[in-house]
Every structure is written in structure tokens, then in C-alpha cells.
Amino acid sequence: MVALFSFKWPVRIYFEDTDSGGVVYHSNYLKFMERARTEWLRSLNLNQSTLKKKDKIMFVVAKVDIDYKKAARFNDELDVVTTVDNIGASKVNLTQNIMKNSELYTSAKVSIACIHTDTFKPQRIPKLIKQQMEIL
Image 1: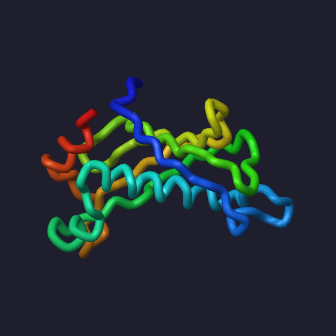
Image 2: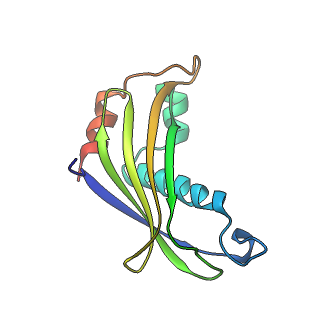
Image 3: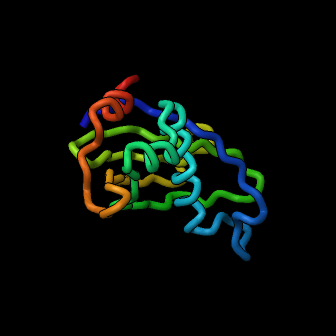
């Protein structure tokens, strides 16, 4: 599978992100990835509040397969690299890697679904939005 493009978002680890062992608590990696996806959409001029109000759609996580490779610690500076793998009719498949320099800390395959805000049922990704997502 050929990636369409990648988006990088920086994250610094705060004390509140860590557990009693001083490493990032496992669920916080998902929060970092969520923030990176939000910023990716913003970089495409896709505001989630506007999409919800005007277009009556939301993008929600349908599936996550995550692999923890190395523990991040307090004050680490990481990058969440979001790579678009595939854009279907109603789903976008992403790879999200959390890196420190060139070292992989966490990797996830994430599938986000486009749903209608009233019914919460899958909805086709509007053509213009899909085109924006496909831009390098």
C-alpha cells in the first residue's frame, strides 16, 4: 500500500502524561494521536465543528490496532506522524507513528469513519472533503 502523504505534529511529554513508573500512560498515546488527527484536518482547512454543523458529518474512530515499542518519559519531545494509507467511500485508513527523532516509540493503524451527526450511521465522505484529504 502506497501512502498518500504524511503529516507531523509535535508533542512534549508532561508529568501529567506519565504513570507512577514515570513513563507515558498507555492510553495517552491515543490522545496524542487524536490531537494529531485533529491538527491534520485543520491543516486541510477542515474544521470539525463546521463539518458537524454545516455538513452534518463527523469523523470517528472505527478501529485502532496499536503496538507499543518503547516507553516515552517526562519531558520527551516526540512527533506524531500521521500517514494517510487509503481513503475509501466512508473510511480513511491511517498509520500513526509516534517517534523521537528517528526512533519508533508507538505505531497504530487507525480507521476513521465518516458518520451522519443525526443518525450516527456511516456516510460517504463528501467529494470536496475527500479531494482535500487526497492533496499532498
